Length: 366
Image (cartoon, rainbow, N blue to C red; front, top):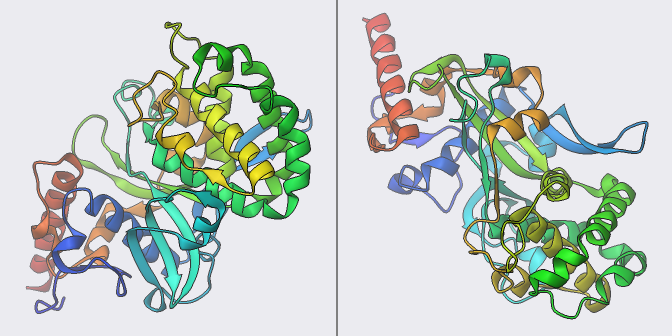
């Protein structure tokens, strides 16, 4: 090990985050997963891709399969040739929006070419709701905010821009009669037609889905902070698959309040509203996600507990992640673990595990 090397993370050589910015609060949770992806990519370990499929009975469901990181990153160029821009705007999407589209967790670029826009949700396995279940039934909680679903809508819009007349025929009969999109009573009265319309849309255009939300998992030994021997992996939701999750939940969701729209139905309604606007006006109105609260607080769009996500992430690598904990010493370089803040749960787990692994490595070299 090169003791003079500055703290760094594997694969991230060109980035808008360097030095201390790799390790800070709300930074390491996206820089470490990116480095993990770079490591898996160079070692030919594919991601687990969650994609939308239609089964023999024409039922839409999310199916896990493996996908190379060349496909996830949308390039065959080496990691060292790529720029990893965190919390940045995916500029190609701005042309399809009224209002500023804001930033997304990670943009992969080569020079001036925008290759992929990705959200990153680092999650622990198991979560509080599944840690007492059999290990094969463990799951991770996924919390999704409106900034994420708005980017999913923009990505879908970008993929469907050549079929706007067809989208208009599909969405106009359902959406045009809605007079007030912020009225909970009106939206709830049209719940079935909105969800049926989204089902039809997804069935027709699922071939246009693309990687969107990276959900790296770090697996611990139950509720303890100790990493499992097989500790890390990366699941990637397509934009259509993520939308499938909230459409599925909206169908069985009930509201305890008359003056709000339940969170999953709100997410589905916003997607339908966006695609209707796109088909009739040529752009998505970002105010749909920032102003139409429909009686809810706008900071969180929805959350999927481990008892839900485990059904979508039903792949052998959830039980046995592909990357061993020892790989930490190949991903965290130059003593970077000392830049972490052990008061945060993930940082603490990585800090103490990495410290132990580097001590072992030092003893082996003596």
